[in-house]
Length: 304
Figure 1 (cartoon, helix red, strand yellow):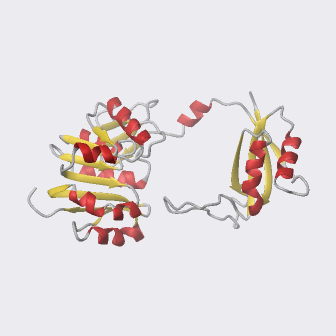
Figure 2 (cartoon, helix red, strand yellow; figure 1 turned 45 degrees about the vertical axis):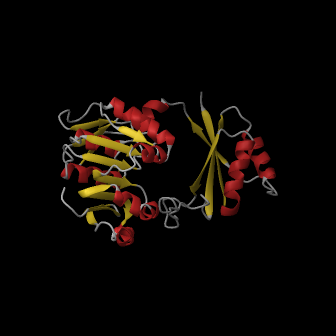
Figure 3 (cartoon, rainbow, N blue to C red; figure 1 turned 135 degrees about the horizontal axis):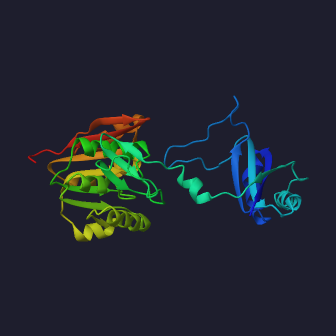
């Protein structure tokens, strides 16, 4: 089966409502792009994690609607235009979209990722480039964490440099379970993963079983019930700066005497304020930086 893209250039004010109206009029999917992309007039439209722009539109937006090749494209555009109060249907162009093997095309975008010295994150449809390395079989999915993001990479590199052999590790905000699995494969004796998202917990359990890693995963309320007073030799949390600051007393209390606290999800400019939130408990400093992100690390007082 083949499809057709209906391409409409329109102003910012009408981009989002027109997108919704196109879906109501029979489009299969709709996306909005910068009509000036690739020119000097291109406008980056990004926000910090957790603070994304409320409106995904540009001053000159390009609305691209996917429709069946046999659909009446003029009618779809006319109905959508009328629904948003446009006096007349906007000009549009059509682009053919040929049928493709979308699974194969999607898989081709994800190659094995080499991290640190010896770590490989390998999708299930690839062979490990170095079978003797620390290999994690992990497919891209809904839960955060495949090693491609700088914050995940920074935490993995810290764990590799400070191998937790025979130690206990808490991964708070575990997502896909990738950091918990790295810790386990580096010799950790006991690893716990915590996440607020039940889907992440399910994904992490599946990934750990697939990688032969014995790890316990909990929602925060379950963790409090099952390990109320437990402290860990290493606590790692790869989330965002705002929740990290709020969690400072709790996360610090989970670090054993002489143990390490490792935090990421922190932009370079946020490092000082996050470290300040933890200063009453543990002194943190930048232990790595990559693409504008940092990992903070420090040790609790007392003997390990």
